[in-house]
Image (cartoon, rainbow, N blue to C red):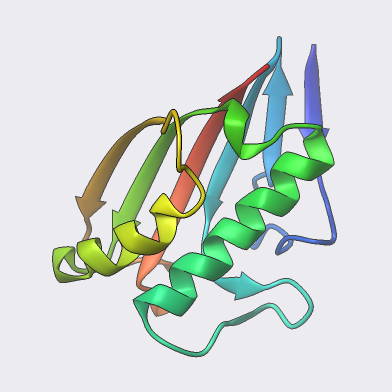
Length: 125
């Protein structure tokens, strides 16, 4: 059975999608961009600040669904520029000190709202 996850502690969906969907013990978190939930504005700063906000948003959704970063098995990181990979990776790595999930990282032509990073996440119980 499909369960829709929604929390006020992460940015509201800005299109026809859910923050996350859980099916049979697997949580699929939609790509998160660095929006501050309270203002729905992109956080000020560079790739470090944006990645930190994305990870906070992911954590809020994980928590709302009853998961933690330890349950994450796969992440996909989309970057506006691969030159930002190292700085993104430094912040991202703080959340996965042990047993890091599988991951892919891509540079794309552009991201919603002109942000520098977007990360989607899959977690399993």
